[in-house]
Image (cartoon, rainbow, N blue to C red; front, side, top):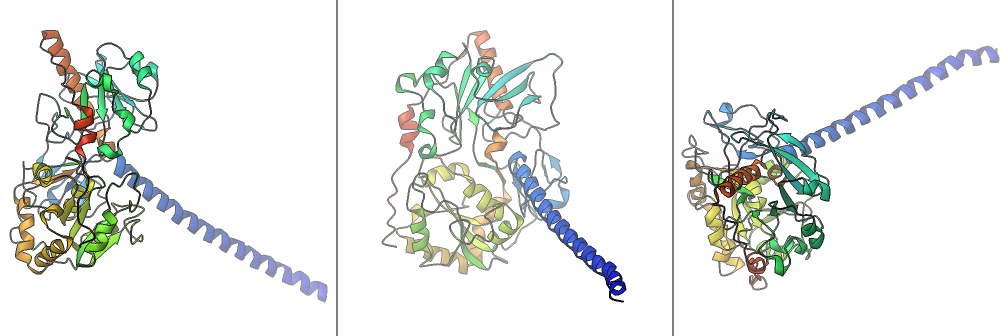
Length: 458
């Protein structure tokens, strides 16, 4: 009897084990699927963030007229061509003599194109780890771009131009010894002078014969477009939003998103102390590594992060370096594209006025103390009419924000090809005039100042 009963119970036990194993497999499958979805979503974001070309603010009137492009930020999309009020933007050149410097390049990307005539200008980015290589057409130009990226002297000697990426190391004597005649060298930095590698500046005795072009956010001497954003007045961004209350739905006052809190190697003033004193006079919500890490940390441009920022009225766009013309994504991406009034500090007011929409920001330097600044923010917070005056600029134009990797994509690097062709034509005619090199010590490193904010006084 016992043996028979045991034999009968055996299939039941096996069935239970089978069901348990099946449940385990199912749980593992579900967990794996969730992880895969998260990874894929993050990778898609990464591709959008770094391979995506441009972000343009949206408004309620224009959304339905836009072409369907993937969006990853509430109110912003990454576009290569964009439609404003039903009109498709046209590609154009920038940074050369053909058109204005201030309008961003919007090359239409139709994939790699091989010219049958083999007309290319090879542009060598002196860096490792970038993936934009190959032959690309340059719409509107007779020659395309052959984009190459490495730190090989063989590649360098075969190139028409070399962009010296400021984060990459090189030896100046070796570079000079391998430089072919008439090859153009490009000084490139998207960072402030204080955070640009010192070795990117040529030796004193080579100031005048090293770089042929400059590609930075500085408009005064840069021949090539390298800024973080522009205010475009070719079309309004809020044509149908007359009477809109920009304070509506914003339940919080001041917000600051930051990851660099106390790192003095790349932070050149007591920024966190400033925010701390300001928070004694007006509520400040801090997100990122310097505060609440639940949002805006892993993916700073996620929908959740944008929604969080948009619940505030003011954004602290405080640069890490007080250097002339250095105005980063903090103004363009974090403030303007999220419809917040930026409270800015970095370069002097005149530099912001040169690039930002009119009457669109509050400069810390305009106030005698941090307390006075807080009192003014309280005043705007309590008066919607005054607050809305900071958004009048939307009736005349819109903001375009760019990313560093967008600038280094082959399609956007066509501006270098354009410049090369212009110079080649000028040399053939005997009218070429080389770039007048700046005094690098004064123009670049010397453009930064000591911060004299009275933080202790409040």
